[in-house]
Length: 69
Image (cartoon, rainbow, N blue to C red):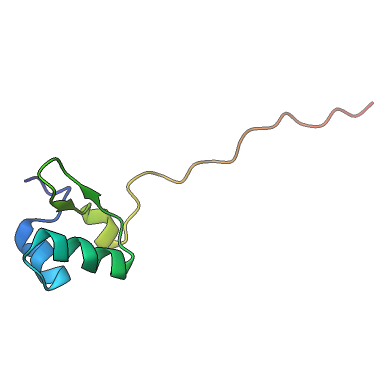
């Protein structure tokens, strides 16, 4: 797997569980964002653990300057 996602070993260490259903329960209790893949295994993005932003902050919408009449 790529560095983008936690490895199965890292996931087992994080949750303290090896069974995928128990890992999912633990992740839900921890409030960590994850997805379940087609095999039923939880997938956790590394940025969810490291606390880094994956995407730059979205700038505020541009507004034209007010017209003075």
